[in-house]
Length: 487
Ligand SMILES: CC(C)(COP(=O)(O)OP(=O)(O)OC[C@H]1O[C@@H](n2cnc3c(N)ncnc32)[C@H](O)[C@@H]1OP(=O)(O)O)[C@@H](O)C(=O)NCCC(=O)NCCS
Image 1 (cartoon, helix red, strand yellow):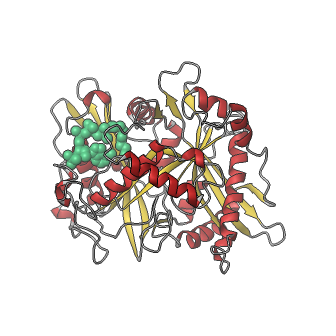
Image 2 (tube, helix red, strand yellow):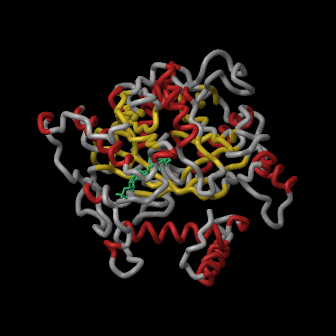
Image 3 (cartoon, rainbow, N blue to C red):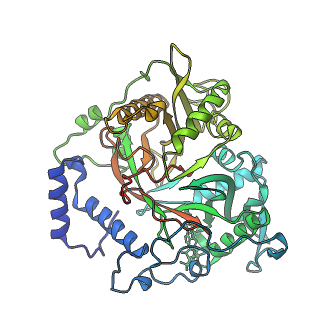
């Protein structure tokens, strides 16, 4: 990520590098000026956003104008952490909610999409494949598969009214999209029902015309009509006001391809051959009793998940049906191998449990999902196959002092190493994770490197103090505030 306009002095960046080097907590090859500057920049802007500091001396104006977001029930810049958690605006009775859709410019019309209809699902897939999130250098663009979208947008209790498209009146072409799915969230001591907002996308040719605020208002209206007044969403951009920020980390698997597509580079003091050797992943998982998750494991996995996730300030609460959906319904069709090495046809998720060989209890589980990216303009390698760490849990976390004496860390490392083996067999090029849950602690040991991307977490119409993400908050270590993985 280029940061030419940074105003953090070079000397200061070097000072930080020396300090971190002395601590030995980050591999030396990751201690580049650019990398450290990236983190400092992001931390600084986070402080400004949260009202802890001001770039120009006056906090509230630093974030610039947000003509739309300043009208919304979200914490505004400079407010600082709230005294108590709670809503910003009270819920409204149904009759007070606007009954008609928000107006669109006259050449466009609203369209509810039926994601269960392969034709309409393909329309969303086509829109996102060409217009959704790219990295800063426009080298890679997310390419969610149609199967992925169906899995992510149709969890138990989904509402088709929350899958909102905008079409051109004359051609009926889909040119914008936004979605919500229902979710129950633990936010510190409260349990709230929210909409998880995702896949906001406006066609490249229609950008900067203030269509995004209309989409956001319309999905908000539709959620209000179903009695939901809070939402959770993430974005790479900083708007008022993140509740946490996590950083993307990447673990190389297919080093030669990653080098060829410019995803990573051979660092100084390193050769390609050595890089390949260092990043080799095991051929098979090794934890005794590890196997693919099955329907019969759902009840035990659900209770393990619930208990494990209580350890984080912000985390979803899944009932049994949701566990079944999120961990089993994306496993694809047919046999492993039908969709290429290590994969079923249309496979989106990989979910594994550890069954204690003696007691037959499920002691752990882990999962990851497939989210490829288009390598923009690359004929030889048009697709980057990326696996993303999804949820995991282990009973080791409930043993006394397991965190303090490193047993939890060792177990999570073992689980994710097994995930590498499975991802390697399925020909993923890279394994990605964010600094959330218990990840921050294990990333370095497992040879993840920091990426350019940051993910900001937002709550709509709910106040709570900042949660530990890529950095600690109060006495909560990095990561451990956030226990939700957004798709
Ligand atoms: C994100 C996207 C829909 C915004 O559309 P746009 O045409 O660039 O912006 P518009 O002129 O319609 O609207 C601008 C407003 O939307 C806000 N906005 C932009 N991106 C946003 C996001 N990801 N989430 C919430 N609000 C966002 C802006 O902050 C601005 O409001 P403000 O004046 O209060 O700050 C569009 O850039 C896009 O499709 N990008 C690629 C996909 C993507 O990044 N999606 C978001 C994933 S989180």
